[in-house]
Length: 587
Ligand SMILES: Nc1ncnc2c1ncn2[C@@H]1O[C@H](COP(=O)(O)OP(=O)(O)OP(=O)(O)O)[C@@H](O)[C@H]1O
Image 1 (cartoon, rainbow, N blue to C red):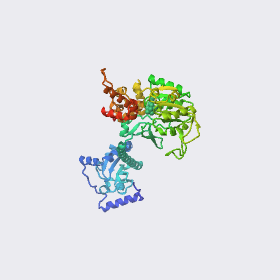
Image 2 (image 1 turned 120 degrees about the horizontal axis):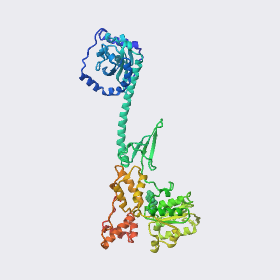
Image 3 (image 1 turned 30 degrees about the horizontal axis):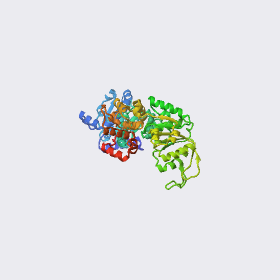
Image 4 (image 1 turned 180 degrees about the vertical axis):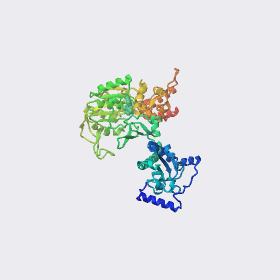
């Protein structure tokens, strides 16, 4: 930026005159004539295009003042040449008006002492009145010039305000300085904008490579920037649209001093973990409008306010745990723990220690300090025994004893502890059939039976599409299902039930390019396993269909599917090989 000269105006003028005299020129001489043609002006203005473009709005603002006061304002480049000018016709009729035309160079070496020349030479604003000019032919003029700098402090031009001396107004000096500063600020601002553009461009490049969706919002919650992943979620036309807040997205708020704020949003659409510390599901979360599910919700609400055991039947992913949690939340035990146990996942020899806990050093590999079991952890609250139908017979005996005696004895201990828990159990099996087959104890079955709820599989629900729409609204508010996607959803057999539907919708909303989710985005295929014709099947065909059904219902869990088919796992593997059955990657 300019360093204000400490030298006085008079000294600057004197020094300039001295330099002129040293060049062996006389005040009475006619300054060197310049040949100016339109080609020259065109090239000159092209060369200074940016400065002229930036300065024009300032000149427009000066226009009324210049006109009214018979002044002229000109923009001069760093070599001293006039590159742009405004002025009143009266002033332009001034007899030496040719000296003020575009292209004329006012550097001191051509025009002697003058405001532009000194401003350029000394980097300072200056006023030159009448006969302070070196050449007599310029004595009729009074001029105020002020330098313009770029953001690095380099002098890039001068603004000059002139008039015939009798008309010159003192405020023109200030005006020249203010105009120069205004042009300078605009220039800096424009350069910053350009740099910002480059930064944003670089940022976008990086953000597009980032696989998680990133959004920026303005203070009206409108999307102002979105990376590729975010555009896949909200559509490529999402810029400018309003963003509806959704609790599953994390975001960071950036605000400024003026209370304007922008939000930078990192979207994290991962599924909520089932964690006892996190909020439990309530009946409010259970979606669905078909009579089958509504009836079960009503029954569950009634059961919730009692202390009766509840038995939940339903395939995997139909919402059994959601129901169990909702019942607990609505029950008088809701301020006590809800503990879920997957009975099918505990190794047979660890069932007792898992459910009832163990004393320090009870067995090899046990925690040194001992551990409390699930029943003790649930004391006062609800224990959810998931996959109860898969519990080994030996463990069933111990469980029955606990339910009857309402007390537990940790492994390795001789002391029993009294326990007060409500039991909700769930299974995808038909427990009565298991009892008949001798795989489940009938006394335990009757103790657990209580209120029985059966949750429909998704394929038998009439509200599949409506459910999908409601879930999608929670997952990604901007996405919608196309008509074809809805048809596919209603036809597909949904072996993984609502859990599968939720996952399919999550993936689809990532894959969908625009607002509408298309069938391909769902990555599911309708299987034509049921023969359209009514002709009798061969034994092998029927076997193949039975195996396919079992595999799908058990989500390709070979152990479970083999049990379902009542054959050994090895036999199932052989049959699968025989029929060339492989799990499809998309499912
Ligand atoms: N009625 C429903 N409304 C909304 N979401 C549902 C519903 N039922 C199930 N879900 C969704 O499906 C997921 C699986 O549900 P849940 O864990 O309750 O099924 P489950 O029958 O207990 O399955 P599993 O037997 O495999 O444990 C839930 O986390 C939820 O996202």
